[in-house]
Structures are given as C-alpha cells and as structure tokens.
Image (cartoon, rainbow, N blue to C red):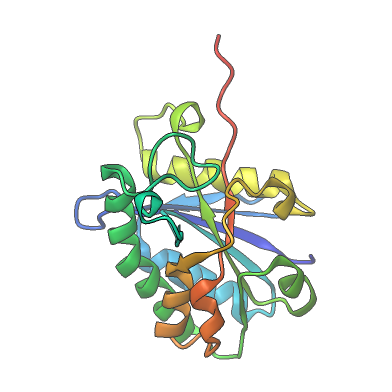
Length: 215
C-alpha cells in the first residue's frame, strides 16, 4: 500500500518507564522510536490525517479464547506454545493493555481532523485504508539484547517482522483461534472507532518475530 507506515507499542507501565514504541515505513526505511505514549498517538494521528494508511501493533494479548470445555478456558492460545495466556506475564500485559490501548485509540481519534476507518481484517484495510490493528508477540530469543530503551527495541523488532511479512502479513499469523473475546474490539467500540458489535468476537492478526540463531 502506498504510504503505509507500521507502528508498534510495547505495552507496559508508563509511570515506571516500561512503555516503548517504534515506527517504520513499509519499505523498512525512516525508522523512529521513543518512550512517550502521547508522541506515539500523535504520530499515528498525523500520519492518518495525511490520508495515508497506518498499521498499528500492540505487544499485549488483544484477544483471549472462549472455549466450550471450562477446564481449558485459561489455557494457552493455539500458537502461544505451552505458556497459558492467563499466566502472570500474560495477565499483567493484558490488564495494562486494556487501559493503554483504549487511551491510545482515543487519543488518536481525537487527534484526527479527517475521517479514518479502523480494521481488524487485512483485506478490508487494503481496499479502504485507514487504521489496521494487530497484536505483537515478542518473546524468548526474539527479544533484542539492548540496555538502552529495551521496550522501544521490542516494538521495533515486531514492526520489522510485520514489514518482512508484507505484502500479506496474514500468512504469518501466529495464533489460530476463531471463538474469542476480543479486547481490541472492545477498545474500538469504547473509543468510537466502530459500532459493530461483532468486533467483540473478532480475533486480530498476531505477528510473532522469529528468534535469533544461537552462536
């Protein structure tokens, strides 16, 4: 897509300095990063206001599975590996993401001077443009070994993985769940990006960067 810019935020406590973001163009050029959540939202709004599409990822669980077997309600999503989404790290990121994703989406929407549509479906985004939302999952060997601004570095790894997956990032979807509770859908409804209640049951794309090779 012409003018596509890929953004990603590593969700974490803003007060504790554990929030970081990164952005780069679809061609992999013009990389930026930072730790200011307001700046992150403003950059997305400015890009959308220019009439160009934006792909925005959040490193936190954006949906959880809803299963018939009650013994598996808190089990790992298909693709998460052995770690349950309800484990300590997952629930901590999920709870923080509930408020930070809503805050960011609200801030972006309030920063727009022109209309933009939101999408959880890549095909509709390709046709209509606007804002595409996805989940980043950076763990294990995929995490960069940096001391300075590690949260922005995590976000950059995820943004780069999204760019590498173009032109069809859905081919790299890491989680296969169809019956879900969508937290990002809830955030879109809460912030006025959509009125479609089906968003509450719509999973989003999950990009999981590959780990580094061992030396």
